[in-house]
Length: 158
Image (spheres, rainbow, N blue to C red):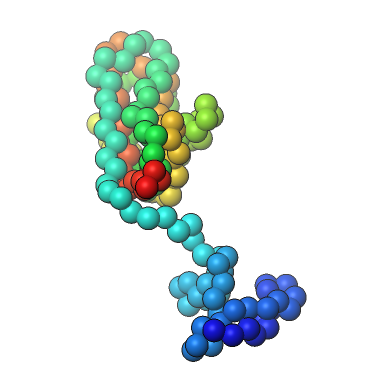
């Protein structure tokens, strides 16, 4: 290991630690995808997360359907959400990440078509107590909602 001087993205000189081969050892940036980039969030892997929740007897009007809650000692990294509405009158279908009481829409379809699986991919990190949430606007009595979240979990109580 040694010390050399490099430059940040603005051209400002900065010292870098390097390994025996001269490759920089930095925590915030690295050689990612063929270019110097900010490193992605580094998380471990403890297992698969498959969130499955349904409500097959929606009330007439607006419905909020909560998915499973992230338990203490875990972080969930959700990489895909899927929502399905079965009915004929709803005007909007939303999937949210609910974190600390605030819902962030990650899927929004207006109006939804019955029996279509709507999906979105990304990376949503849920802390203990957070959950996925479905919302159906203007449903008819006994319409159906099906929600899915797929990804992986990280155990943080080790």
